[in-house]
Image (tube, rainbow, N blue to C red):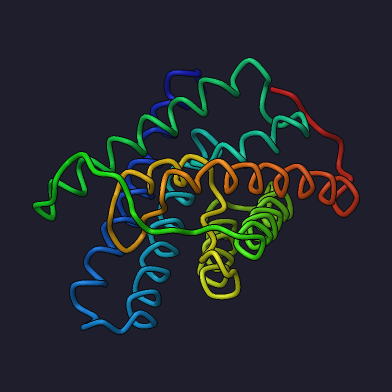
Length: 222
């Protein structure tokens, strides 16, 4: 696939993934009547469902990363060319930021806003590192499998991580940044973003190392 087609797939996939995360959070909060557990359940199911669809449809085009941490991990293992890493991340960020604006517009909210949801502390950072580690391990473990099969496993992992991770598993630097721009159920205060991103990148790097041990197939550069 040409780089423009792959970048378009990453941008479109990130747009719909981020819109699902934020939009389902807004919808769930409105309908759950103050029951946070029900809202989180709805949010996690919607996220897992759209992730399965996006991986099944777009993995043959771009690999369906939608996540800078995953792209970095794949680059570390030689599965994404180093020259393509920055364009991939920019496409993911662009699609995700557009999704924030579109989602706010759908729900008649202010387009530009900062989140006031504090998410910080060692437990939250550990949760982000663990969640991203597991995600990267799942990505490498399913490498070479049919997109629908890989999508099912990765989507189920994310649904589970919403519940076992104290942070509700952002596990994605791009979506962490995007969620700082929405003062809704899924938001995160911008002051808390840097520590989350560092934890995610550390988790991704460790996940890539663990994958090299567990899945020692030869790395292939594009």
